Length: 302
Length: 226
Image (tube, rainbow over all chains, first blue to last red; front, top):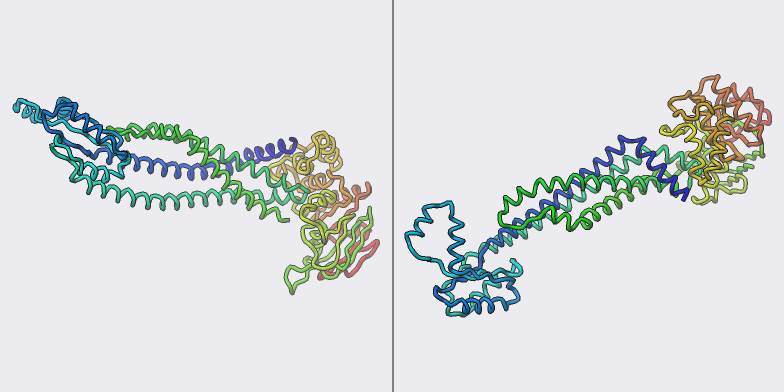
């Protein structure tokens, strides 16, 4: 207990009496953590963007006018039997015209043309949502062979090509993204490792003196390991303090960019708080501790 | 107390720093080891505190055979031997009192023991009034006295002083030597490594002279020969 108290005392004394070194070390840790969190956010935004684009792709079946609603609902039920289909939204004639009017509320020419027509020209439709948007092609194939007399037309002729392109881009982005993130994380970790080694280099005389006055290894190593713990904890707490307001500021811009899409950056960080920041804390702590151990060992060989 | 039997040490194959040195120091002795730079004096000190291991021969300090000492035993050996150096080796971010306490704290000594011993050793070296000052706030002589106080807190049987007056003026050097003599009178074996001719001649104690790694003279009441 006394030893633990002294280790904490030596460590805190060292942190406060070498306050500039402490600030520089924590700043380097912060820069590394900020880079990593920015990459996580960029990745999240790109994933959300791709998902939003995919959701915009309609897989719709247009139903013949005057088809009784029960037959349409029966067809909806039949489509829903497929394991690849998550949801089938039935849009009636009236809803379709309502949506149309809402969409073109600011376009009087189109609304005037509709009025001129004097009737509802839109057909009822069934919009199919796949369980996995990457499997849209398979859903489309199932719908292509679906035989029903009430189907007027099927609107997914161009989607196959678009989906293929999006999937190809997504795969490429993932490959390049993982490579860049790996390089970035590795660089950040090396910078952190080196910063700790430099910090301990400035304590080489102290380590030498500890050895000369007969300090045990426990007393030589543990104050530095405790300092590593303090540096890691402070830097992760500060990054949490910086990143949450940053995400709150970013969220409205993102919502405006990805209209109708649910992109909750802040919610994602809150939901995965322990995984994201707990993992960062552990990784930074392990790197700090390893750097401290190797550096102290170098100067304690007296 | 200290026995060296045919001890040799080389840092490179061609360059032996210490060559076949045999020496015995009795408890309570005051021994000056003299010689020019590169004679092997400091290497001898490093061999005695386990900082270096001998290539040949045996080094015995008390009950310890340092040629066979394990790294786990080194801290315990160093608590038996007080060491002071030319450059004082004080921690600049700690006060003189903290520097002295530090030697006890890192060895796990209890708070009560530290509270009792530290003020008394600071009093012995005459630093009780400057205990709360940092090393850069006191003179070189006072820094060396603080280093001696730190070396004394373990109540060592042996005190090794490696050029302790090298960075000091004549008055401060005299004060340090007088302090070492006082410590010796209390029964501590003192080994003084120096190339200060006047100090050695004034002491009139045992003098071991080294040249090119060898002991060339060992006189009970010796003078500086070189």
